[in-house]
Amino acid sequence: MENIRNFCIIAHIDHGKSTLADRFIEKAAIIESRNFKNQILDSMDIERERGITIKSQAVTMPYKGRDNADYVLNLVDTPGHVDFTYEVSRAISSCEGALLLIDASQGVEAQTLANLYMAMEHNLEVIPVINKIDLPSADIEAVKHQINHDLGLDPDLAVLVSGKTGFGLDDLLEAIIHLIPAPSGKNDEPLKALIFDSHYDPYRGVIVHIRVFNGILNEGCSVRFMNAGAVYKVEEVGKFRIKLERSTVLEAGEVGYIIAGIKNISDIRVGDTVTDIARPAVKALPGFKEVKPVVFSSIYPVDANDYNELASAMEKLKLNDASLIYEKDSSAALGFGFRCGFLGLLHLEVVQERIEREFGLSIVLTSPSVRYKIGLKDGKELSIDNPLEFPDPMKIDYAEEPYINAAIITPSEYLGSIMTLCMSKRGVQESMNYLDQKRIEVVYDMPLAEVLFDFYDKLKSVSRGYASFDYSVKGYKKTDLVKLDILVNGVSVDALSMLVFKESARAKANNVCRRLREEIPKHQFKIPIQGAVGNQIIARETISALRKDVTAKCYGGDISRKRKLLEKQKEGKKRMKMVGNVELPQSAFLSVLRTDDE
Image (cartoon, rainbow, N blue to C red):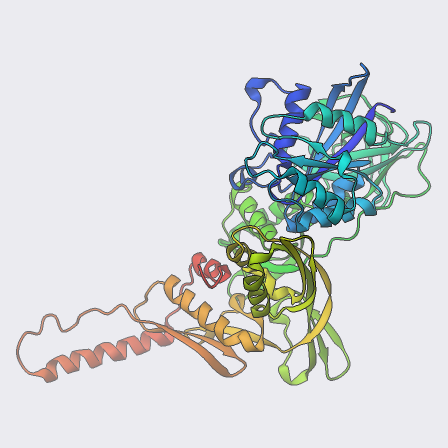
């Protein structure tokens, strides 16, 4: 056990975590060079296309130190985007140390600080690593100053590496061995293993990822999941060497997987403790903090007959994505579906794309919303995230919406435009700190609903990509909330309803009506699209009718003949409008999710 090191790589988005992990794997030679590809740990197509990590991935690597001892390094590569912080917290709880990566040209950013605090909460040994030192714009001395000033870490311990070229890799591996402590478990104690992830294999059932803290886990033993109470017999035990590699035993301090023929997906809960039935542990390990979704949206199949396939897809996705929360839902316009909770808009996009790609389903999403608290005049308090649950405005005493603490680190020349952006999103400045001559940290109190859609994109635009952003949910504050209904041909479409701040309702309604006018195809009759708050229409667009030229065969002659034909056509269109249904294409629902400026 003295020769085992468990560590994760944490950093702000785009600081080179996956590239550095690639160099580690190449060095360990656990995969043949002909099978090697960049971002080897990013197993999903979406991750490769977008160049981001969504799932944290574990891998076990052998390493021969300069002291000629053989070491086992268990590495967990983590995501950097703020939406996937839960993945990072799970990786951190299964390690003793962390490599905090800092881009030599970008310096310390908002998510760097957030991840450092998370690692410190779990008492991890943190090694600062300055990456991308081969870039022409690298400023190593400035970054060392930031490590000392902003992070409070020793800049002399910072290891200089280039994930692209592999420079400094040996020094980093030695630092991992000497600075990160070995696991402290005991083999002769009762078995305690933490479930930190899982995934579904269609042939073998659920594959559970575990970190053994105490005891020994053997093939053939019977185990209990302490929180779920389920009992299983272990069929296979092994380690992650890119592919699953069987080993008959996992000892204290090791990271690996178990296969136990688990078909009931609901038995597996990330954060649960696995123990041996023959000699059970008295107390379960502390799990992770409960995940709190901040964005809510409903998912429906385009074809109602695909509902059962969607239910199965959601179950399997939940295994691979512990932060996804869902329950059954139904809509008059779209039929049966699921109300889902996400950690952010990128998380929502990724889930949508995975359902469509991995399970071959066509789905429709409703407009995203946050969770509001509504106080009624009779003293009751409701928590709602679905516009359909919004009570009668006459019964409402007050409404509260969630607020966040948004920390933005930016070069000083972009401060003015960032302050303008935050104020346009109803932000109130709490503090401003000059980190050094060029960089400023501003903290704003902002409504979460304003940040959901396009704030991150606009922030990157006004700062030319230099500003970084991190947020944490703070609490609730009173707000003026209304329900915006969208009417198509006089009929309210419940899937397009949304809860909005009263002052921005008109702009939002105009935007949605304009989008729908572009997406809904023309019919034989005129279609009005309206935005309404209560009984008041606040926005309108009209889709003109497909008009057949009934007067084409009239040439010359009396004008009254043409008028008669046009009147007859008008009457026919009126009748058609009364009985006609407007078909809403899937693109109409998706267009509402896009931002104002696209």
